[in-house]
Image (tube, rainbow, N blue to C red):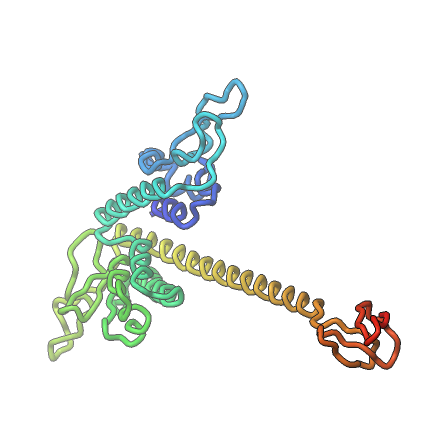
Length: 319
């Protein structure tokens, strides 16, 4: 999931050079990837490799193991970084992301949160709708982790008004629940948490059926270690997705505000230029006067010669 997040960031911000490098000492990388056997190899598989130090020193050809650098982002001849990820590079990034997501689905038996939310957005969900859906699913997951023995939090009715409003009515809404470990049961009327290890218990939380109030099939729900670990990962994924949606929303607002400020500045400049440009030339003082055939005004009440000469019958009075 962390590798998918790295690749998602590359696709969203192809000009952000900070995303092309991952420090080995980065706490998130070290905790989720670097400390694990095969972790660095996974990064190599998606295109992050140790690079040469570069520069002009004698050690410029030595491998710098302090950083993992995305392939192709640094010139092999000059050692200088490129300006942006090209469309061809982004195609490769997306192909690698899809491969990792397929592996995640094979491991967990569920699609990734990032892939599902991306599909939801592509099918027309707004930023606010996507965030509301992720927040409600996060609530379901959090309730499971806080109250694992409460059978009510293991099941969600599809026709529940709150669920329908935030998740169910959206394209890929059910898939988002599946990414959090829920599956459809009871002819598609209920979403129930599926254990990672073990079979789905369809009698989980069922009401009593005998007159004495005892149901021999009833079992108190519980979370095995694998399912609990899966839910904690999905909780982190949902929280990261919500934070990203919020950051994206703030970025859009900032762009809109900047565009609005630029538009106002252009309008103010145009207004100032319009006010500073005269239309007709005024000659002859403050009191107005008459217009000649050329469109100039002459003969105000107080002074102010014009500078244009308009002739009388005998050859022209001065200005």
